[in-house]
Amino acid sequence: MVAGALLLTNGADSLTVRRIATEAGCSTTVVYTMFGNKEGLAEALYLEGFERFRRRLEAVPRHPDPLEYLTALGPAYREACLAEPGFYSVMFEKAIPGFEPSERARTLARAAVNILDRAIADCISAGYIVPTQPRKVADCLWAAAQGAVSLERAGHLRDGRVYASVTLAAISRYLVNKDIFPAPL
Image (cartoon, rainbow, N blue to C red; front, top):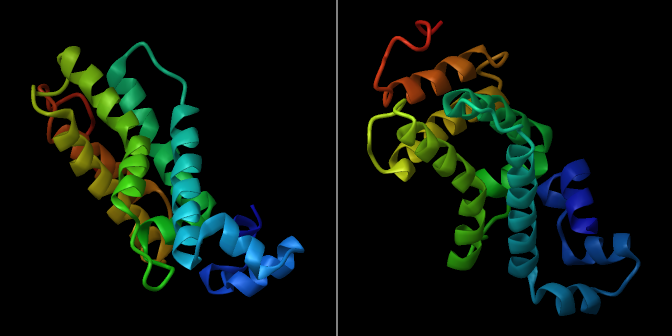
């Protein structure tokens, strides 16, 4: 997708219908026909970002131990966020002024995070995590991971060590046996 390439190389400011049409070698009418308007284009980029995100998380090999698998998702999440800053900015930073994803788009986007829900449900079934709603734990873990990634992207954190500590601390909050992980950094 031309818009995705522009986003990755030139940022969200490059996403004008005219520029996209020029780069694609078509008229603006074609872009409007495909996406309806700039909102439709923004929503397509939002969904593409979450689809790429989902694929990165799904690429994490399943581990027989559900807690090992859950902790392996953390670095994949961080890498997914840092690898494609343009999509990240559309997905999490409101990079396209005025764009609000539709409820349908938000539901589809949440499917990427459902991988965490399933991993947490497996940890609950295995007795690692206290019985609760997997979504509650996933939201806590997502918020912790997202906060650390945002600080790292803004230059406040220099590497992934704080990210690892924060995500392990979020998981630890719900563990039945609090001694499974070493003390945070």
